[in-house]
Amino acid sequence: MRINSIDAVRGLTVAAMLLVNDAGDWSHIYPWLEHAEWHGCTPADLIFPVFMLIVGVSLQLALGRQLEGGAGHGTNANADALLMRAVLLRGARIVLLGVVLNVISLLAMGGHGFRLLGVLQRIGICFALAGMIAIYLRSAPAQWAALAAILLGYWALLAGSGGVEPNVNLADRIDTALLGALSYQYDVATGLAHEPEGILSTLPALGTVILGMRAGDWLRKGRIGMVALGGAVAMLIGGAWSLALPLNKQLWTSSFVLWTGGFGMLAIALAYQLIDIRGWPPLGRSMGVNAITAYAGSWLATCLLAASGQMGPIYESLFRVPLAPIFGQEFASMAFAASFTAVFWIAMAYAYKRGWRISI
Image (tube, rainbow, N blue to C red):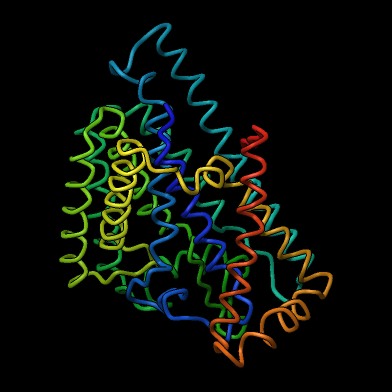
């Protein structure tokens, strides 16, 4: 089951990822295009959680009809096994793509060690785990219970083992022990590591996907009001929870799951109302149907520009020199990112018009 508004929101989310990830000058960025340094939640911090929420929505829309009626035996059990195999294989392909892109980045840019985990790896792992939950834990109460257990359990783990400050929190300590130099940040002198898409923090990220599955079930049944109400309640609980457990994207705290997931549900409910009910054009749909292709393509383009040595000269001559004196350094940096994003927007629009869809 495909819903135009979901493709549109997914596409707008990927476009926002490219806008945030491809600044022309990392020393001059508007605050709303930067991630919070540690605690807090900026507009940029909403992007990846909304995408993860949509992973759950899409999973539920794709599998919902096949999974109705509860777990079965015999033929149904065989069908479940085939479905699970397909889910695991797709999750593995997404993880592998993320690893390959990190290898290419290392070869093209150099200057830093290989990073094992990352955005695509988190998507692939959570997709596979959420698929298992969708297939073998089908009832809504069971999935809500799983979500509650994940969020409360993660909070307890953080609170009971060092808190949520850098380096001393349990997530960082696990990544230091198990990933070490394969992390996003690694201090050779101290041996400390930090991985924003790390091992333990993947657990609450799975919670975001489960929340998306529940929203997807409401969407599939036409209960748009419940999506909006659920989003408002999630934001309310997340905001209140942040007084005890700060919003933190790098740790993907439980309060962050509900705050950002609630925001995403409200955005989906609004998009559904405007696009699927009122008939507004599904802006971003072409980007959304080839979301991972756009993300991977932008990564490869960045690597190519960096390896060729053309990134700096292009930014300098086409953006900084003509724009910065008039509009400021931050505007020039954003203009580069917007132009880079526009190239892939146009490319995905052409692919959509030709009926090309690349599925990972």
